[in-house]
Image 1 (cartoon, rainbow, N blue to C red):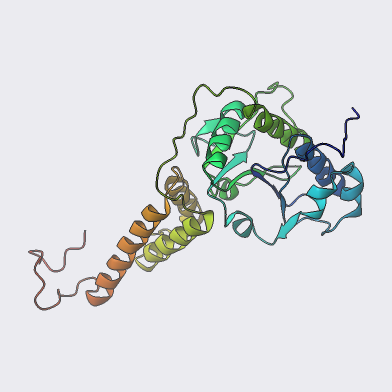
Image 2: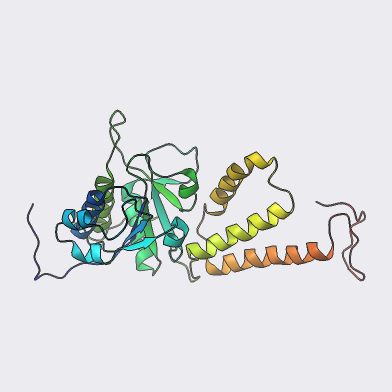
Length: 276
């Protein structure tokens, strides 16, 4: 459908679209076109296979030049998410209760409310052939999945972006009856702050031999991150959590496992060798 009009105001707001390891330039271009159709403008690529910029992407974007020209490229997904507060991961596969699963309508309403509250929001899309890994999904807050024919559930990446972009725009022109999020006075944490908490907790646990047996460490870390990212922390809550861990680390260094309490300690356990 033809409908480009340079005399009208160009909408350029809303959640960031993040593509993980996209393979074909044509797909990236069609994603940019879908975004522009519905007012989204910020596209981030994680390690695109054919590099960037990409002439095929430019051609397939059908004059969505503002999206293509503003595209940012990152080496890792953590870097691409670092400044965002709330992120959806799109996936068609069952994840065994890995994250709360929302419909596109609910996801778009939630994103709209958070965006209006000043949060950095994003939608994460996986590879054309096999989507996102569990480790990548663990970095998001919730999952959004599409109601499709179970016997033919395959969507290409541009179609998936188009569906979410459409729901995003629709959420701004319809009355929203109920949104599963209420803005608070606390500043929401960024993904970078959450990743810092991950690293600190994992380092503290690793130094105490928590990840045992070692071959199960990757899965244990996935589960730990899934638990910690199940709810959206505020900056203040992240600070409290990290302060607690830092305090425990300082205490542990002063009193190693099996050692004695420092002289003058008020709260001595009856058995110095007991480590709960």
